[in-house]
Image (tube, rainbow, N blue to C red; front, side):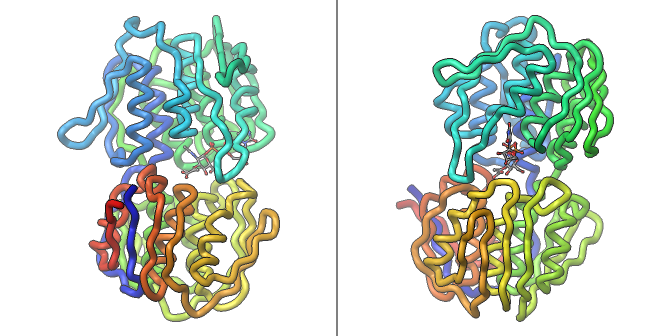
Length: 421
Ligand code: EPU
């Protein structure tokens, strides 16, 4: 197993290009099941989760390959694979997000058998809202032997009112509703840019979705959808992670291919901490300073602060002057990284869904273990500013969502390398 070794203290300078969004790419790839003809999707990052999703789609009969220009070409040939409707445990256990094939499979093949995703280190992660939404459209769903077995002779538009915001639950209902008969309304739909990107992709393919990015979305069912060329949005979480890399090293870096409009809560909070942020077109310049102030952070559904940025903010707040409180409103148990940061000298107390951080002048390098993707990002950021050497183990979690993170930070001047163990 590889590890990342960081010698902290280098100031980052230069520019870095942000990749396409993992969490937009995954449901968009699954939605290709619905389309007639080939699609070309540009901007897909080269990360493990994308490879897992490609494998799941191949298992379902899809032809998934990377073109010379890096675009992902996906085609499902009509009538050839209608008997394939299973996403097996071996693949779903690698990536919880594989649940997003449920909606497309039900819609296109009238049947889906998807391994029931378990909880994970960030929390319980139920799927009751997905099931409720799909059942409202007419699906019969039962769970047997660890699998969600869903069938639907016909899907019919319905009014669905989610009782909580769910990103992939909204994606599953959207993908099931686009080819359903009649109109579907989704109240309390997730507004995340990644959900918007899926809806825009589906509309380009011929769907009729309105209210994109709003609490209430409406879907008029259509007869057919067609393959398209599409470029996915830049990854706002990768962008936010690099912004904190610039800030925590008191550096001066510029992100290219970043969308400031998707990063409002992150930018506002960084400015409150004392970081200088200058967006211009598709670039964002981040300039650090010597003294950072403690702030309170509360994760919320979009446009609030993303939970996927919580660990990275925690790393920065470890060295900000004063007492900060992070309240985790999406995944209340998502604090495993706090214990690892404490091993680096951080003063953090976790109290239920909150973490209280008292800033200290510096962190100290040591050996730490990654528990999940974003926790890993937080630990790498902490390593960049820690005195001495930080060795980060179990970095396969990072490979799931960040493309060549060590290499790209190194090109900005960090003393960081990946070592095979
Ligand atoms: N929830 C329910 N019932 C459901 C579904 C969700 O109660 O049926 C609850 C969850 O327990 C949680 C909240 O609703 O408290 C939000 O969960 P959501 O369904 O929105 O999460 P998700 O769709 O499974 C996506 C991202 C996560 C990200 C969350 C929240 C993808 C592939 N994953 O997960 O990303 O943290 O939304 O924004 O889009 C990551 O990239 O590292 C990651 C974990």
